[in-house]
Length: 291
Image (tube, rainbow, N blue to C red; front, side):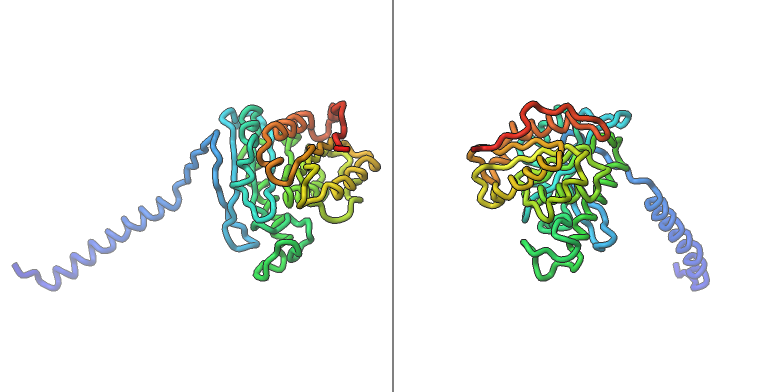
């Protein structure tokens, strides 16, 4: 049967707009439908967010214990990785998630923009230790801001105890811990720099006399010399900071930190004792220095 042109035109004029309207309706419905994010508790999660100032997605790692209940406030550790490392590695240090699971801590490990941004401890511009030619001119600023962005995301998504937000980091992350500690002193309930690559003037310790600090390093650390860490400890003693110093006999820069669940448990014990705005019950032994 031969279909007349007029009839073809009529069919097209009816079905095409009708089909298009159904397609658009489905697309609109899909866009408007809220995304359901299933939280996997008890696992290390790799996440990302869009970092507006950097104009790209930045990843971070997150651990939420199985015991987490949104109706109850949970303590939070912000964990900073070392030079050329990443969030996925540092959050897997032995003892980190195990202790978080036992004690009900959420742990988040930001990237700090990239693996060598130093979290702002080398200033707002390009870094001079571990930097690259193609780094952005404001690498230090972006590195610092990334940490604070991720902290903001976690505080918004989860029920966090504002009196129990702690900052911990290894090596470059230890230097970042001290830098962000004195840059945002009203946030942290405790700081734990581990084998820390400390930058800048030790006079900043005066600004954080109210924040308990636990410093851990190895006696035989060849990358961050123990003598440099001891100078910071001497200033803490002089300024009257609330601190604990654990210098591990024969300890090195790497395995002594990432393969030492006993030490990590001691850091958690320290965090357990510290609440923002409350006087910490101080340990009997303030220093452990190898002679």
